[in-house]
Image (cartoon, rainbow, N blue to C red):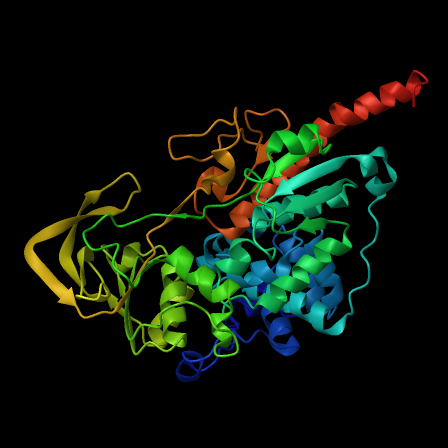
Length: 487
């Protein structure tokens, strides 16, 4: 093993990608992953720092130096199992988590050069396990032999927060059922993230792992409409409930012409493409319009996903319209670069003011106004200010609005006593407990739209708090009954 001085000279191993000219017209995964040789080379750069700052940067506290050391040793299966001690969805996190602003941001190599490619290494070992180690049933946690086994817990929503809470509670020995409104589990992981970033087969495999832990999943159940939280608790016998229903309510531009045909919210557009398998057209007939000239309003990850999806569906020209500069774009740097490489154009410091429709009601243009940056606003970013007399028209026939999402209101509107904030998000304490004593919540339904790994962290914290509650109430009551001769 090279010394620290020699390792400092080693360049970061960059993950191979599809050629932009090819990938812009297919839905195959863009990043191709590390080979074992590349993974071990990159893992060999790790210093295994004494204080492990990278672990502090991970919302689920993956033992990063430990799993990387196992890669160096060639124990790829051991590395995958080490990650799963904290993270039940490593193949997903290795693909979509913003490591550059979390674990990799804390890596000491980042102070002098480029940090260890932690996300790429996590993806590598998860993929290696899936491809080379037929999945054996996970070892039964010791807690499963405890009274927890008879306690029922419900998880509402099968996105990253719900799946994480479900996995952790199952590992503790609880009987866990996940309820999902749509016909397939995964939440935003399935309907929001395109195939070229997160293949559905990867998601399906991760969900099968959760099922192997004992997690039951019921789809086509709209909690809040077909059954309420109170019914789940009192009639169905679920002693505690976790709510992770996400942020599925799109924000709108509120400009003239927004109701024209050919204007989509990014939520609707990506959901149609993903759940109805437009990426496998013409094998699947999906009711989504294929624009020739497409404008996507916004510059977050969802906007990049929508723009790159439109290109792959056959658009001739796709542009991003964003009211601030490149420096303020909230999308991951990697996704911005990928979009540029694929030919997506950027209209920066531009803001839509109205959408033009033809006599048939379909979009035929979008009027925008030039902007300049003023003083910082509450978000810390410089506020965009309109430039008088600077309007211009984009020739487009499809507009996708990707300017944010609000909390999913289906459950919250139909749950008396559940405290919400002014944005409609569920109010919780630091551990995710809500105003209802048997209900916890986490993820985007609490914070508004955020990252997958932040939602997973919320699911883990809530699972710990739910266990403490159940141990001090339900299980304590069972023990008291046994000691008094009633058990």
